[in-house]
Length: 205
Image 1 (cartoon, helix red, strand yellow):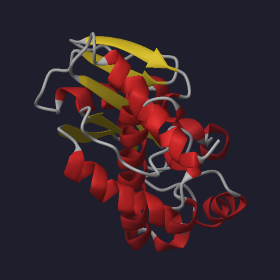
Image 2: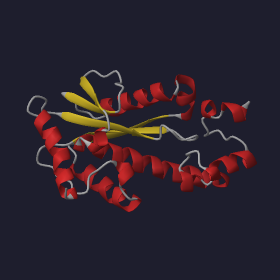
Image 3: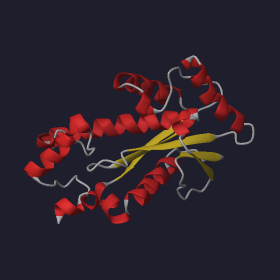
Image 4: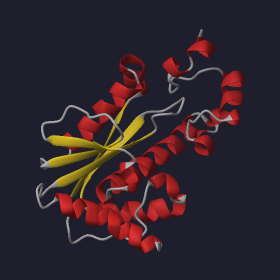
């Protein structure tokens, strides 16, 4: 199957839903798994006139491609919002609840109330609009794929900013994930204020 067909299928999925729900937003997150840093989410509203080539699950795209698509999505979206939940909120609420909170913030920050929110994954945040989850939604829905790219690019940029503040941890290389390098740096320098202590209980204790 040519890849261009995949892009069209993503948009056709949302277009079919718009027959019943004219305004649809896609919602996705980036950064649930890392040992450090905030979790980011994005909500994106597209319309039937929009077609963005190469749109796909952000994890399947190169960094260069994500950066290019980031600008195109912001330019073409009817509305978008990027939100986050802090390390403190992650440790206090747990990562699932913090992610749901960040998703709620993203949808509420759109400035437009969607008729339907499509949420990547298998859990739903508490929203004022109707919502439904879509498993592997970033490979199914154009709106969710667009949200995945905005969330991913924004979080990666944020981790590069943390790298400037905490260069000893090499955050720009591993983006906070539990790589061998990251664990080596934690062993050498200890846990910082931007690490998720609930993710590192054994080391912290």
